[in-house]
Image (cartoon, rainbow, N blue to C red):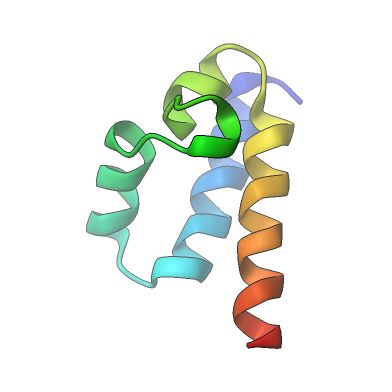
Length: 67
């Protein structure tokens, strides 16, 4: 998945988790994610690791629906 495609997919999924586009943008660029080695989603996507961020968000969604 190319970084532009990954970024779109990550942002779409993040809106499903947060439901607030302003918070999504802040999360994407600022919040470190432990399972990604403390990188932000934006940094991981730019490094070509968009699939890892997508997997992370899918896991979050699954946990929310199960809980």
